[in-house]
Image (cartoon, rainbow, N blue to C red; front, top):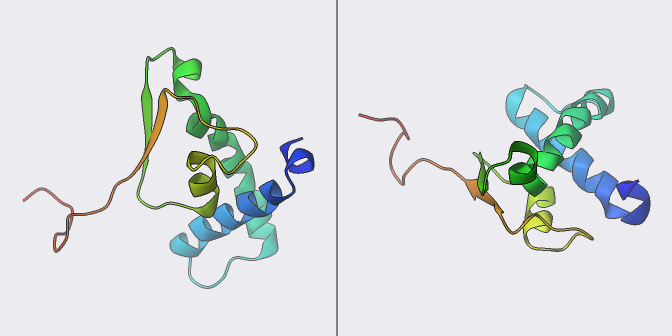
Length: 103
């Protein structure tokens, strides 16, 4: 339904899935692989939008190690819907010059 309401939705979801696969496998993912992976991305969207409503928590922060154009569009309010005001998003990266592991 979202794809019919917002034409760019499908492409953003496929691009996010392609990006994840590209970082996890050698070579470029095939369209069939992207088509399978997008199902997992679509299943995560409710957690990106409103985890507090799902879990009953007051607030939530979705933490991931990279961002995607979809997540950027969502949290920059460039999509027809926005995350709950109680939902946050953080990109967690290692400290500059560090391995990101406790010493």
